[in-house]
Image 1 (cartoon, one colour):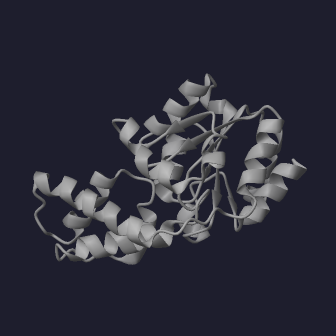
Image 2: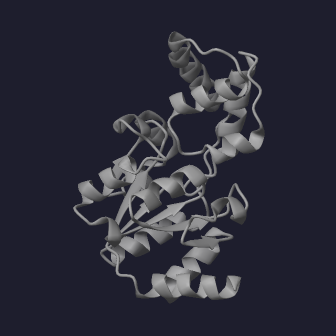
Image 3: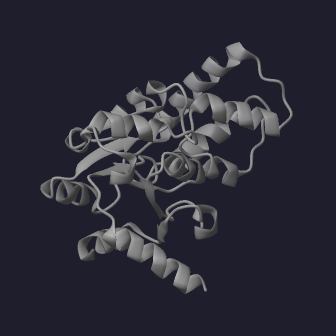
Length: 229
C-alpha cells in the first residue's frame, strides 16, 4: 500500500508543470543546522531554559521570536517581552562565533541547471536578511530571483505567507511552484500555500516529513529525480 501511494506521488510530480522552484536555506542550501542548534542551546541555557535537541530541529524555519516563545513555554518559565530582543542578539553572536559555511554538494550546479531551463528560483527562509547574506556566498545569493526572509514577512512559517510572497514576487501561481524543504514547519507552510513540496531528510527522519508530497534521502536523490523527470 505504501509503495502504491508513493508511485501516485511520483506520477503526480512527473506530469506537473512548474515555473518556479523555491528553496529553504538552512539544511537545504547550507548545512547550518548544527550551528543553529548549539547557538539556541547555549543562549537558552543562560535563562535556565532546557529544550530537547529534536525540538530545535523540528522548529527549523520559523521566526526567532516564536522559537523563544515556544522554548520558554515548554520550560514553564515566564518570558518578558523586552528579553526577546536581547536573546535574539546574543543568539546571533553565538551563531557567528561557531558558524563555518558549508554549501551542500551540487546545490550551485542544481540551481544553475534550473535557471538554464528558464525556471525561476527563490529563497524562502525563516532567518533574517542579515543572516542570509552572511551565510550565502555572493555568487549563490545572486542566483535567486527573489529572496523572502523571516524579518520580511509579518507571519513566518508555518503560515503560508513566506511562500505566497515569493510566488507573488515571481509573478507565478502557487500551483506552478515546487518547494524544497527539510522541516515540518516549512512543509506545512508550503502545503498551506497550495504548493507541491519535496522534502530532503537532512536533519529529520522521513516520518517527521510525511506531510511533504515526496521525500528524498539525500540531495543527490533529488538531483537525479529532477534530471530524469
